[in-house]
Length: 242
Image (cartoon, rainbow, N blue to C red; front, side, top):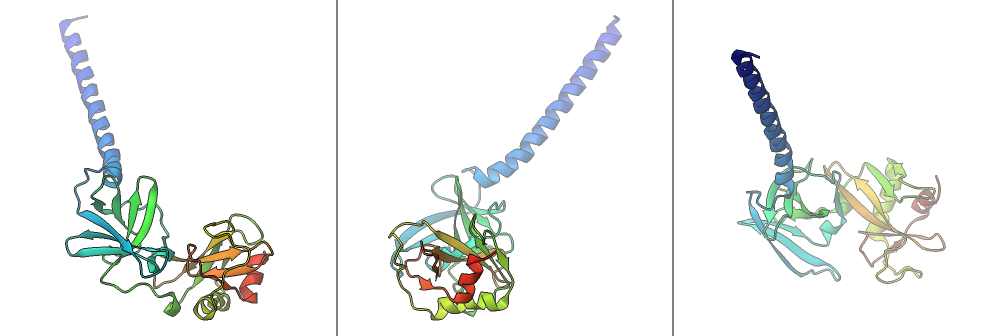
């Protein structure tokens, strides 16, 4: 093989090597960008410091994330809130203790609500302290879904306004009690009832539902509550039938 042919082959090999290296760098950069923004503790965004204190509601904590004049809070009212999207990608800050991030919630402005995301996933919804808590009592819900994995009402949904209003009215006017068969500290037979409202875009209001051993149904303002209210016959029938 002549010297010129060797030089041509060398040049082609070098060009191919450069192209492959460039593609690898671009690929790593794209993937790394997604990963680093979500999980890298060196992500250079606002740093939020955390704090906790006893809540005015027994059994709950008043948790905050603060950066400058911005303060986000998670307390009794936020305990019932879930994000409709559990895999947020827009990071708006990080915590002071490592890889946890503060993420925007799709459908919500970060000026209103954000999500604390840890290494294991979502940790909680936080409300900007400058806006009032979401008041389910004065909200209008368009749909509900029962987050029970099996049984006649597994993942059952409804847009029946009268049925939804029956749930909200029970929570607003019912008398709290302790279900006879409930074991203190146990979450067995407690499920979430997801309520969707146009007034709460990107978020879900999760009502607690407890079903005792006899099939009696109880409702609470969130799944962590110890104050349960016996559900009305309309909702009880809906839970017990397909």
